[in-house]
Length: 194
Length: 151
Length: 182
Image: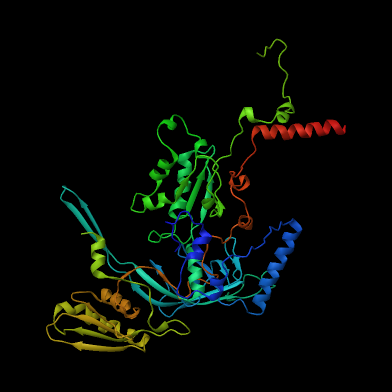
């Protein structure tokens, strides 16, 4: 990283002075950095609304053409939050009913995002919008943890051994089911058996 | 490592230079805030094993507001030093703290400054520095009694 | 001896699953389970009970698992499991009841064949970032790019509520405005 010992040089001059093995020719020739002009754009309420509509339109375009690429999701599982994407491994600590080979759907999704956008739930996203599925790959016990209690000079000591259940989940699917703001006619019946 | 990855590394771990105006601020509460930036705890990438702290340039350190009789005991630098984690990184983190008594900062430091930290409390205006126009136009809330003597 | 000393000898590992198991399909990892027991001694009684009562059901429910029975004269009983990735696990079942053995068989059935070690992280991902790594300029107000420092507007504390003086001044303004209009 940048050397801090050269106190008298500016940050820009330090960066320029750094030597790397594969410095591109472009960087070497541009001794004087060109001045980049920037300005701050102020937002009015109308412009904000326009911008919101435009952003939602862009997100919907990506979902419609399936161009959003890999999605990530923040899942809420057994009181803990995990940021996962497809093909991730997650360990659930403590008692958990599903056994190996079981595939189930995670319904508490706090957020979903792609390369260019993030959809945040308040606090949860709707079940019809997101589908995150997981498979139980392994169910085993943790390593043996030792709890050793000793009271000095009181001739009392106690040792406990504990192994809790570890369930290894493979997230195998994170997908968006419909566009933003375009919910299907009947809501909340997805995955329900009549 | 490719050029793009190397630049990404520089961008993520690049040191920021923060400016902090200590005018009318409690140095001990300020130290609580400054120590987070010196240790890098304000960043989501923080890890105790990675050296990701920022620089903090404190100006107007002569104008700090000390509670009670504290002005006899401690100063801002010592307050930050006491608040930092007590480990081998403490001296290195202190080296990233630059304190100046007035708002004059050398140019080579000022041109590195890329962001400013917010003060903890609003700066009050001294009574003798309130503009004349505001004093004259201030609304009259009640009348003095006739026998009241203003010396 | 602290728990950290124990961990040093036991070792530690990261979360892993053999052969990308669970991506696309799931394959059971247990391949063979061997029950070793004595036909006469009391230490194998629980094991003999388990074989009489539950073993047929276990074999029927797990058609992919080879079940071996190995009677040995005057030796204590044990379980041995062999997995698809070459891993093995041995559990002594000496003097255990059939319920205890049932639990250990279930434990061996759901394992993946890696030895049990302390986990350093409880999650594993091959794609650590989708929107790109964090930088100090992410989600910052863009006005700091061209700001001149020091700037009072960026430095002042966040104002939460109005002071009494400000309230008074505002109310007096309204009062004056009403008087002028009437």
